[in-house]
Length: 374
Ligand code: AOF
Ligand code: ZN
Image (cartoon, rainbow, N blue to C red; front, side, top):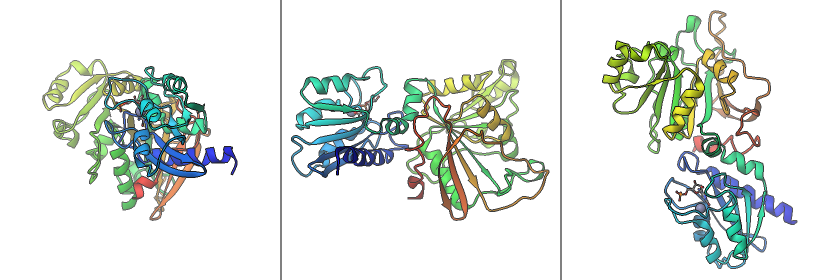
């Protein structure tokens, strides 16, 4: 096997490793590391949990033999900064006698940004940068969204019937997806730390917006876009606002009214916001890395039009509604790239990425449906 093929193989494995950290590592990036020597893989690992050891340390610890002179393939530049949760990786690689570090992409964190590579080279370690660079960048898209663009990564999802309907006639709520799709949605919610709907969804469905039966779920901040504060005081969201945060985004006139006071008394947080951009900026300030949008067709269009969607998941069932009075799903913009699909006991889940997103790098390293099927 030639060097290039070997590089692809090992970095590819490191990418797969990294993806296993989704939902556990945020707001940190997902990172994977593979240690190879003389045509063999001698160790590998990934960053699993926020606050836990980094991929490099896990991989070094997994080697059953000497790492002296071995090559470490890391999807992200090893960290070199201090005053954080775990000790930096560069000294660990040097101490382990690693001869060469192959880096997928540079860490955009201003405290690293090339510094890790510099320190390795200064210590005499050979460093090559940019193997599967764009794939490795896609892997850390939510992290880049936060660190570089000061916003959360946005996944939008909806369910539609085989004939593209999202509800019954007149917008009546219908169970479109099957059980397996529903389970998948809850697993997806568990991987996110913010969820957003429009007021229309609250009025028609009275949703709770939590990740059901997900022991490893992260706290999920629940957002409602509700210009005129129409949210009912007896809605499930308002009644549970003290247990789990609810942020209602409204217009300037509504925020001073008596309804606003009543909501505040029930523990709802109000946000004066006149645009999706303002809501995303608020989500970033609350350290939300990955926001899940569960829109009706109008909100979906608003997100598409503003270019705010990074990733789209469409669940399509085999059911047909066959009624012109039933609302139709929003049209997916032509340029969106289909990046993967999977069958869920008859329902079809399809992923698209928005190539105009400023965190789109490669149509790979995203459609990681495997965790949902575990
Ligand atoms: C790596 N390998 O696996 C990760 C890195 O607070 P800490 O100690 O977890 O450090 C978080 C920072 O480390 C994060 O902002 C990013 O710059 C880098 N992440 N680096 O070498 C890893 N997760
Ligand atoms: Zn590190």
